Length: 236
Length: 168
Image 1: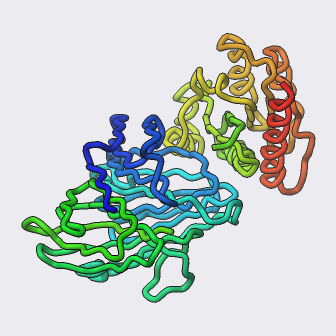
Image 2: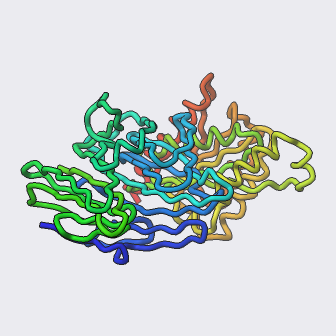
Image 3: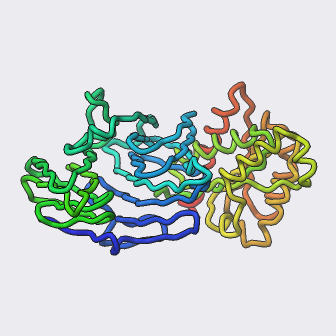
């Protein structure tokens, strides 16, 4: 079963400095029909104005992934981590027993466009942790690049998350096709990040999402003149 | 979402009280509270601040990292954690004194803390908090690890607020 979540149906918030689309209920956007999908609880498509951002705030018991499409994101937290994140980098924070952090657009001139993703953890109250690393963008061209998953010490490197879930990224040129098998009983969410793709023949534009259940495989294809970029979540 | 709302209000010039506030806020989160972090504005004039390079630098950073308290914050809160520098408590004291004009604070907890638990800094805040109906819960500890003490204090007052909420 494939269920399309069109970009324009998402929740929307505009704080001036932040323009955000919420695939699932978040903050002031609340829709009981869109509270998440399996362990995927939040999928925010955020555009942050230069120099602006999210001041110090707290989290508990959430696996938080940031995926930057454009610009840079400055992160600082109560674990003493202070980093700048850009495209082709992975940031994963396990809030666990509690963290306080802030996130700002690191540039005073350029906007930042990023996805913030929250997954419900498999275990509550774990020790908070932070991971960040970069990868070669060629690693996601024409193939699914594992960004985060439940395995430690993968090669190539991926972020460890405290949940039976995997997040992949792929950039597909027009007509380029890959197949992803879905294990029995598992589910998937595919998010259009940029450009145009097709999933099992269903067109997915930037911001569109697709919930996948009771399917044995996904055929992901770059569509339109330039293809597109996608995020794939493999979920229990 | 936690069942207790903890408002963390602090005043800081050089970052010491800010660290206590963050530690107490973290303790509140660890005890499953929702938190809001707020910095009280300076009462000093801009010229005095500009003349102190460290103060100015910290102020610019903190103005970015925190917003000022909002009128809805204390209404939302079950517990208000108040962190003040040892040398200047008038900013936080004034904030607490203003709460009675916002609404009833009866039954909410006030949890003041200052570096070294400096009595001269805390007493005016205790007094202002009691005057507007807040239940004052002193930190009552001074240790060689003030951050750990503040974190434990944040946990403790959250649990106290939870117990109070259950019985009310």
